[in-house]
Length: 342
Image 1 (cartoon, rainbow, N blue to C red):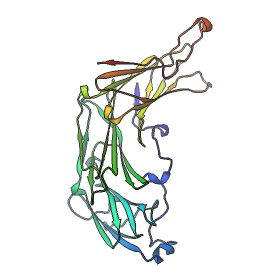
Image 2: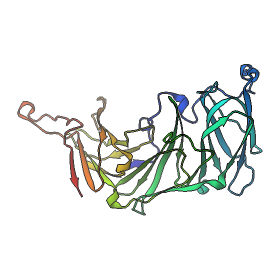
Image 3: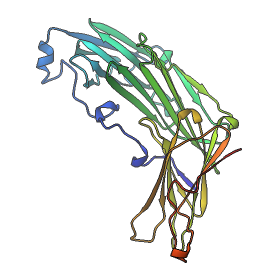
């Protein structure tokens, strides 16, 4: 079995509104930018100055900061101000904003710092300091110390009235540090989830956690033991005359997220250890087919799991019946399911 460290496009669940994800193209919000005369002439615009400090407390230009409008004339638009000095100013309409900033040291081994201000009320000229010294590590790891990190993703969702905005960061190393910035939001207005994937020679770990409150996370520590995890087994059958590997995708059912793709030699079993705290899980199975034949795709969405239990999904086995003597019949995705306590 081979695990892909770079998830394929279908494993990354994206939002229907592209503007909700960091890095997607959104309407410019900078009132000082060319073509923004309407904002510049508006009576209620204010200067937002953002200072960026590295882990040593010095100004840094190694950052990616996004200011996303939640309410007011700037709602639904975003700005990405930047200046190499570490201090940047953007003029924006009055309103509520979500600010997130991603700082790096230039050395991948040092990891990155992600600072989120879920509530930024812009009703006057304002200065915000994004300080990497305020962050704390995200330390989420499986019980098997031989496991290698594949990739992960943290998402922050902020609600205000009937409006929802999301920002996210994908990571290729486990060295992420995070911090909350600014005042609290209303109770329950901030939701965050973190998904991380690890692999060993015999199994994969899918560790996901969800948090709801009035602040963004400042650090996160989770070291689940084997008894805290649920086991998901995906068994692929080998149909007569068919060669080649199957492909298995696993990801949480809820929220925009990144998942895991694995190639599976059939007949064979892919084993995952997952966190029940993340909710249900979606499984997609692409069975090997004859050359030129259409792909056989099966799915088992919203698969419930329990700590200490094993859930088995069997796909594409080849039973026979009196009506189909000697003819392979693909098993539907929801059949061949069993759950047992470890």
